Image 1 (cartoon, helix red, strand yellow):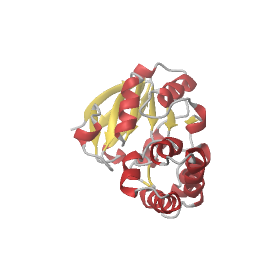
Image 2 (cartoon, helix red, strand yellow):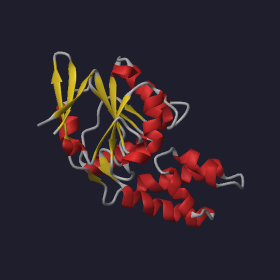
Image 3 (cartoon, helix red, strand yellow):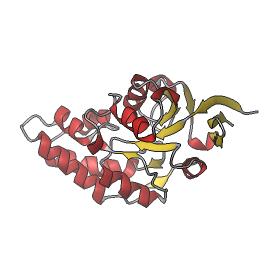
Image 4 (tube, one colour):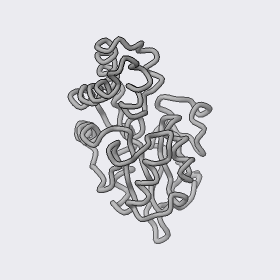
Length: 215
């Protein structure tokens, strides 16, 4: 028996950890970056899911934070080996037309395009990347921009997220949130609903919007 979550005007997806698994590639970049800038990698891991410049500002304190953020971006764009689509992500994106779907990510546009291509996933028309908002997750900006570009009320959007910062930002934007348990527990995420992957979710476009159910 399925459990219906509701009908929404649109679905906004996080990318890393929600649509695709880029963890190995990301961590290779973080290891190299941490070595170059003398950063404690155990601390760097706490900031994954946030924009590179935010990670750099938090961890690089010798006046090189801006340079370090750009370097981390460059390392990640250049390494997409092993980036794969997560279960259910292709079906989820394919079930929705471009007026009903968006990506809101802490990645730069270059990085999300590179990783989506590596994962073999279709790129929605509305992709809100780091260059397109003032404040990154856990601020609500990425989700507010996505809703605005889709022409819908944020309160009528469902956000799929795997990181606490993203869940917090989506809630701050007024969205309902489906937590994907790829890297955090349900208690850590604090989403409205939780699933192991998008393969556990059904998305169906109806006359009223997007009907979302748990299998």
